[in-house]
Image (tube, rainbow, N blue to C red; front, side, top):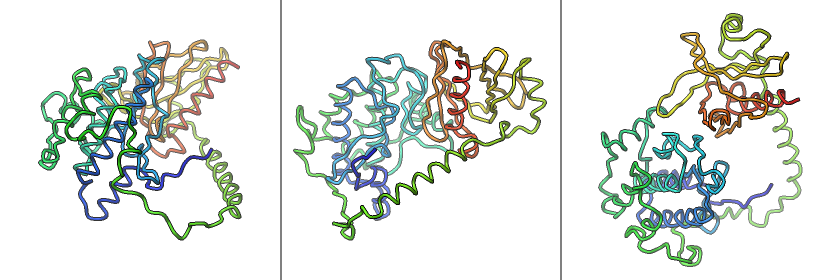
Length: 372
């Protein structure tokens, strides 16, 4: 698959470049332009009844023209078809409070992300940060409760964006500033107009440079060799992803088998994870089992310190779970048998041994085993 080259990298790359050049953040004019373009992209998505759900600078590409493109639609949600979807997706620093509470994501969740990005463009840092995901969630919660509201720097007030950001970062999605209010806010100075496209009406503040040494260079002679090298690398990665040890970070597998396996069961895979429910994050050992006699599988999460089962993710042959990998570390399991509840897990350790994609592969193999 071939995609258009984003000569300017991502919006995050652009922010890093600004800092390398000695700037704290983007200028007011640059920030205004990028916020306006993101609004245009979101307005189109929302008109098609699609929520992005993972809006952040890494998912915004700066193209050769200097204009932006919104990317990474892997977690986007069509609300016409999935209006009650509650699985946790997003990036901790940009995720909205309602998503943290396992409530359905709406257009307002994207607008929360827009508020975070607007703050980051003007200030040079994310509005909510801490040393761990759980602590970031606590910072967001404290902001929403009013216990420790986000402090708006003076330069944001001077830029005329303080009201916009605070309106986008309201806890209640029903009270949060909507797209129409954003478009007509004074900070954007009318850049987002009805029926117009910013490509036609505005000159980007920065246009990525071109590597003149590569201009006109013939690349065909070594392109096929590059493809073969990539194929070999991919094949190597696939063979390395399935480790022989099914008991990751377990020193006494025989004791685990005695305590947690039913008669006739055997372990398919076991590794430590962090399980999140709302704002609570607990260390849990995840154990996948199979029973060849009746072709059933179970997925248990276990308190390793207390050596007790804390719960089982329910599924059946007729109603299997759905595994959604967010990245190398995070994955969600959706259980139709449990009212489509989303179980959120973060993996620990080497991604090729017990990462999110390894868990997805193991669980999907178990699902196939049940129906064969």
